[in-house]
Image (cartoon, rainbow, N blue to C red; front, top):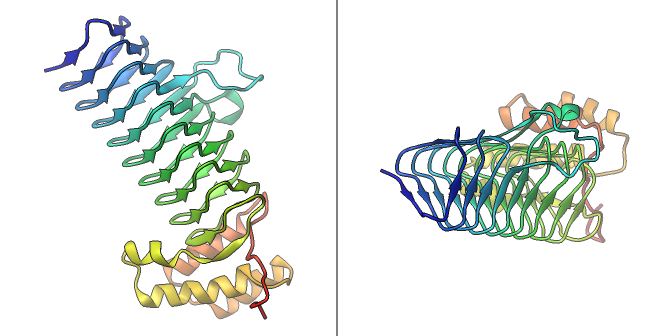
Length: 267
């Protein structure tokens, strides 16, 4: 059973699932696949080659799958791929990929994109990510599972945001944010420690949190060269999955890392 308002415009060729609700003045393009139990409230536009899973909700004026804001784009048949149970609040925009970035923009499952969030071309957002109002991703960004992006934050192209990290509001992020870390808000912010509250909510053990505290001190504090930090970490840290994840993320950083912000309490 479908509930489609008579003012909605659905192109021939669009694949519409079961139990879908499409409200007034929505527009769906011919290359769109919309999964079961999804809802478009009103004035939602879904275009391009966009594949959407089950149980997604689109609030008014969301625009999904449209051409990227990239001068190098020349109409290539790039795509947007969206998983299940995501929420797209008012005026959210998600652009398709480009030839220079893998031809695909993707979102996983159970993400919350608050009003006016923008996800640019060739970005990849994992699962259970929260992006607060007006958070903006430039192109080619990877957001790993469980990350939280504060409102009115802007993230530079090619940056990676680690798993279960949290970024304060009104941040300008130009380097990678390591997993499990808490970043203060503001222009060119620094790390202020682990995301302890988030880790506890995710049922991380006290042993793993202690491991991460040690890894944080070695890798992300102090003024030693990063090569020396990595060498020390390899010698002193155990091989638990959480410490290995943080160490691997640091090793793979190409744009550099946001590091601990020094204050008067630092040694």
